[in-house]
Amino acid sequence: MLKGSQKSTNNYLIKQLPKATVFVDKRKTVVYVSDKWLNDFELNNSKVIGANIISLFKHSNLEWQKSISACLKGLPNLTLTESHQTKNENKKWFELQSTPWYSENENILGTILQAEDITRRVSTETKLEKLEIISEDISDMAEIGFWDYNLAEDKMFWDGRTKAIHEVPEDYIPNFIETSNFYKLGHSRNTISMTVNRAITKEVPFSEKLQLITAKGNEIWVIVSGKPLYKKGKFSGMVGTIQNINERHLTEVRTKENQRLLRTLIDNLPLSVSIKDLESRRILVNKSEMDFCKVASTAEIIGKDDFSFFEKTRAEITRKDDLSVMRDLKPILRKEVTHKEDNGESSTYLISKIPLIDTDEHAYGLVSIRMNITDIKKTELELRKLIDVTSSQNEKLINFAHIVSHNLRSHSANFSMLLDFLANEKSEVEKERIMKMLLDSSDNLLETLDNLNEVVHITTNTSLHKKYLQLNKKIAKVQQNLSAELEQNKIEIINTIKNHVKIRVVPAYIDSILTNFMTNSIKYRSLERDSFIRLSTSVEGDYTVLHIEDNGLGIDLDKYGEKLFGMYKTFHDNKDAKGIGLYITKNQIEAMRGKVTVDSKVGKGTTFKIYFNDKD
Figure 1: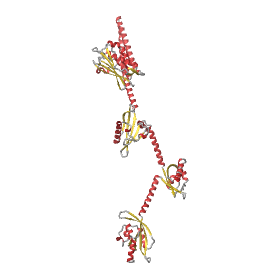
Figure 2 (figure 1 turned 45 degrees about the vertical axis):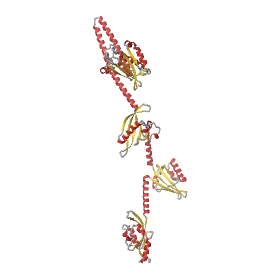
Figure 3 (figure 1 turned 90 degrees about the vertical axis):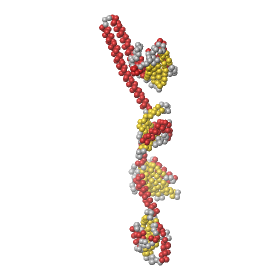
Figure 4 (figure 1 turned 90 degrees about the horizontal axis):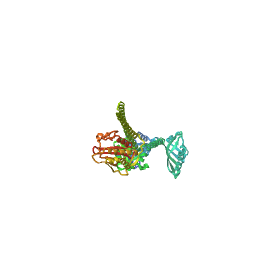
């Protein structure tokens, strides 16, 4: 047994030990304990001295308990790793060493237990182990291999992944100098050789995308990287990685080809195409859109909205449509819009706007497509005009057929009746009268045929050549030809037309048109007042309009309006009226792509408006 003073001294010395230490007797009772032990295991000194060591650590490793028993039997030192749960539920790791405790007489008094906190070391080892596992996983997933070269030993090391990339056996021993032979002859092999040499001589790391020929003859794309190592300023080796990017490279190539194909396609579409973001700024455009916005490069248009290219009102309308499409997620399709171009001409476009929708059903932009249909609209207009002309011509043809049939049948019936009278007549005087009637009927038939021939000529003549003529010169000529009738009937000509006014007409028709309308005013003059014919012009769109106004008898348009320009239609008891002049005149005007309108009041007079087409 230890004496009291000695025990007190020992207790004092053990408490000061820098290492966590506890002395346990043969009954496994704690005799001495250092402050370090108490602190590390969060124990109270009053509860430790005299307590069973096993009871203090109920969750201790069974191997550790056995090691204590083994020490009490005099077996050599034993070292174990043991975990300990702290009061804060944290886990701490200790390295425990059990040593027999001998007396001066070499008798075993118990065991000495010492503990070293290795929590940080265990944590570091665990992290390293995890990193190694993660590194291996990443290497496998990304197909990245590791390699290094030791100059002193002249040894090259490839890990399993590097060997797999090169398609060499697992027992393959690489050679630093011969490694470049795996790279494709030409650019790749030259590049790897020069790059490695530059890395060694200039102490710079490298990373290159190159083509590699594997041991099995397969051609693949890889990224090879390396970093030179130096000791005391001298090259000592190199470490690096190699990654198989063949699939990624082929995907990139296919993607670029598809992008190039798509770009070629949209650039050659007869449409203006642009993709806009939520602020209506262009993020992609085709060549037609650049031409439409009058820019030479994408830098001038990308990131800009319509306010940069169009006047404010037009841009505001476009922005409003954009917001509607992106808000409601409903496209605008084939909206017809007309714009006035810089040259003053109007252009018509079909505009479609389609929302771009993400996986959350939110718009992140839109596709805008614009198609210029100005030529199509012009063609449609021309076609509509052609259809109108064709319909009009067809209607005229039908009317003409009816007229021809009716008139010739009337003449034929008249001839047949007169001839029958002539055959049965006995009186010479009566026969002479019937012969005169036959001659008059013959003259009327010839006149009718002449009129019909004139109508046919106007309707079927497709080689009309129009040219500009000074209107007043033509009026003066017709006025001179009608001077006797005008003077006889005391009709005043009031001409307010300027001398510079010209009309685009067929020269052969204009004399007939002016003569017919002025003669018509003379025929249907009023005997109750002094008569006049007033001539003036105006401009309406593509037409120069000639106004011929008189103060004659006038026409009841409600009653005769639809028949006014019909063949052989008369509306007054005038012995000189034959009903052919206005019909022929109207055909002549329409043959020149013009038109004629009439405004008349009975007892007040009539105004004809003749529209001469200056463009067509």
